[in-house]
Image (cartoon, rainbow, N blue to C red; front, side, top):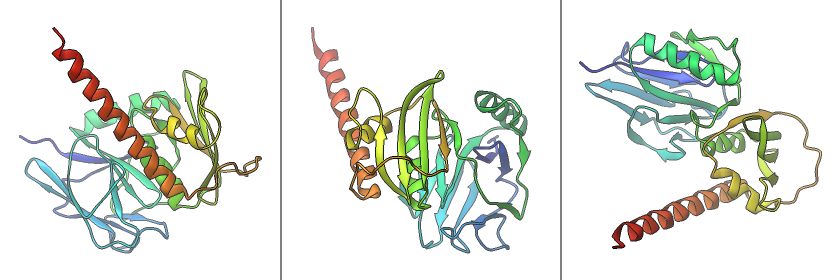
Length: 247
């Protein structure tokens, strides 16, 4: 028997999807999940549980729906997929409710011991999603993408075992500078930081006390970073194949 699917937020809330034939998400109050964000359309997307799969459909939304940082009109979702709708980021998990609660408790322990776990419920409003968590749970690219879309100003930091890894400096949704030693500050530091898959991230919405060093559209910069990551992973895969063919 197939296990149910749950939609999880980064701050420990969750929603059972299989309770509805068609679970609707949008800004309008008639949705199962209401997202209060100008970047979210009134009827933004639907999630439908069918046998062993979960189908996402974008309802011609103004700003799109993203699955693992890729804009989609329709997609079959899998366990662990990350969904971005406006500034909100969700994770899809398959399992029983007890498994989901246990998973959230373990994940919360990495962030803050008093992190709550609670049910979203029908007609629940989400306003400001807490932008902090673990990169093992949420990919860095859709998080940065959300900060760009929302025209955020502040500092996005990544640490690992309390050691500084790097930071992106935002001004009105534009990345104006970056740090990620040993890469030089600026554009190359952005590309280096995007490659990290482990560590804790946090966004501090405050004024950025530094002059702009990067003069490039943030979306283009992010796309270039993704292209470089794909290229590097492809090269590493080719090297692995060559090594396996050696006598």
